[in-house]
Amino acid sequence: MKVNIPVHKNEEYQAEVTDLTYEGNGVVKIADFPVFVPNALPGEKVTVRVTKVARHFAWGRVMEWQTKSPDRVDVKDKKYIQTGIAPLGHLKYAAQLQFKQHQIKELLEKAHLDDIEVLPTMGMDRPYHYRNKAQVPVKMVRGQLQTGFYKRGSHTLVPIEDFYIQDPQIDKAIVVVRDLLRKYHVTPYDEQTGKGVIRTVMVRRGYYSHEVMVVLVTNTKRLPMAKQIVDGIVAGVPELKSIVQNINEKKTNRLLGNRDRTLWGDDEIHDQLLGIDFAISPLSFYQVNPQQTERLYQTAIDNAGLDGNQTVIDAYCGIGTISLAVAKHAKQVYGVEIVPAAIEDAKHNAKRNGIQNAKFVVGKAEEQFAKWQAAGLKPDVVIVDPPRKGLAESLIEATGKMAPRKVIYVSCNPATLVRDIQRFGEQGYHVVKPIQPVDQFPQTTHVESVTVLECTEK
Image (cartoon, rainbow, N blue to C red; front, side, top):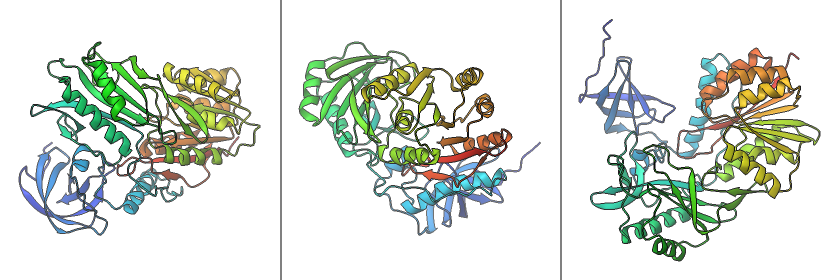
């Protein structure tokens, strides 16, 4: 069947931007045919040049603005939008928060769940310089070693020194490392040939502790001029606690390998979340925006309604961030996570903080839930904080059979949240409070949220 496509590549059209996609692109319609346009905001009248045409949509670029949105911010450095560091950087922060609330509302309406209320998004006072971790690629660009970020949808490196959304001390540390790599002629890894030494520079800095860890990810076991580079980092980076070489010899898109060598200082740094001390190694998963993470987790804990007598299960527990915070308010906590190193970290963190009522197991959450259910475990509250793909149906079914009073769903993807709310509905669980969105990643399109479900039929 022939589809009539009303737009053609390289042609220009006058149009009004009608919407913003969940990826932050403007939408214009040419004879009802959608064209996605980066850096365009609803209400703007624009001249669009079509850059790519597919069967059901096209991509375009703004050539000229006839009118601009009152919510537009002039971005001083276009690199932030080009690279996807700050894809919403051109939108006023108040409008970003509304956009995130609207994302969840719109998906609920499409699923005929419009009776569920969505609260205004919980934002930040300073919605920039918040990231406590950077992982920046190292490449040769026009004959010089550069650190920066990839252009959206490509492996073209854009050199950047000020990353805008990262802790400024991290940005400074990256420049120190970059200059040392240049000075000692360390070659960047080349994806095409598989040759070269340095792949990525990772820097972590504790929000409360201010402890800094520098990780040099190498394609080789040996780091040339290691002593001179280490001495230079020690001299140039204040608050430094650890320098680690991570070895990743595989031809892969994975950022980190499985082997670490501590070149200087400690194997780990420390930071606090909700008053609990966490040890953070190069491979630890640790939330990158601690201020908002505390608000997100506190919202989840407050909604669990704990008084010290409850049994709580924490699915996708990671290094134990939610579990250990909950343990102070519960009788017993069980955490499950598929990554063995994360469970080791969780046990280590429980011990360090003297928390004895938290038990951690390695496994797929859905399989472990079925085991717990078969063993007769009766939790009062289940907390889930799944990855973007959401929950397995089998986990939702096992939860239904265990019949906890409450399910607290911490979501990082509104689409899978809405799907899972429907599936929980089949188990007799319904949303009993307005959903609370939390802005974990200002200037980007991501939105986290907390949803409270209770069983109304058992």
